[in-house]
Length: 314
Image (cartoon, rainbow, N blue to C red):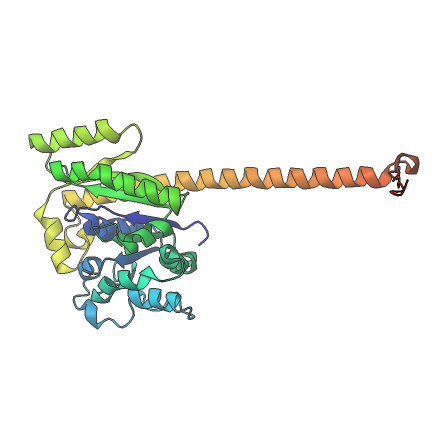
């Protein structure tokens, strides 16, 4: 699908609900009728296991398999290795083989854009591609940011999580400046929020005050709940595990917020594309008119320049 949006979910700090958000955002978008592909870009394979595939090392085709084919300049089937989950989403899984892939990428040609090559092929079949990044800024995460249209940053209302945001934003800015100029930050999502505690209130307010003017902080906040942890352990989304709970309601609202933002950005991109087409058409018409005027001009006005040849011997 030409209007597919590729979103990287990233945070350099682990344990902030990044994988849980990837699963439930994906299913939430699928519930809205969107075609969604999840890519597990973490060697720990947390996303793969969170969707019920408990033996990732036994899966024959994973992200590392596909990326190795691209590095070796071999043909690959973009749909090969994609697992179809019962909740209406697709998954390109990962396993421990990805942990050694950083070394292989060092000498690879266009090493930052290997994943982008795959995403450009597969995204034709989807409305959204969500990439669950590992909690570090290694070559795999840089590949994910190079392939993405935008970034969503899940973070907890904890002191260390909030403190690490500045470093993460600098990293995203570096990738935008050097590799992917179209990369944008969709927003910061507060996860595992305990609204009754003062620390949650204070840090959420601090994040909004520090970044809210430049970066969107999503209106939806994901509440802390043991049910979300249990759902992950069961290999299900929160919608399948506890559909009437507060976490399911929050992720449903977040999915709508992301879809509305995506639709708004698509309309802006379409307007920009139409303006560019009109400008190109106007320039073409102007060139054709100018050419016609030259061809129809009075022959007497078409003067051949007089070239004077001087004798150097004089």
